[in-house]
Image (cartoon, rainbow, N blue to C red; front, side, top):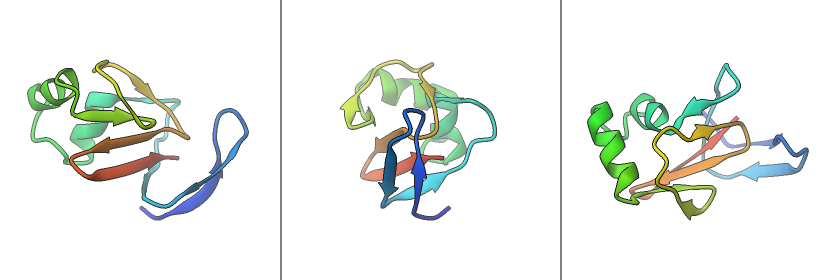
Length: 85
């Protein structure tokens, strides 16, 4: 994982000054991302932190646990940020 420059789905060039996470498919569900990054210990905790508004998606609080996170999106949780590439 490393900072980088990339084009998002709308062809805007973004500079990512945080940790990046590369996905192999079109998207990853938000709760799966939290688990893969080891930001939570299990799926129940991932659902709880999303439903209580502790997670930000592209800078805004989002309560959708099955949210499809795609390249160009950012996720924030407990002071950590990740940029999806």
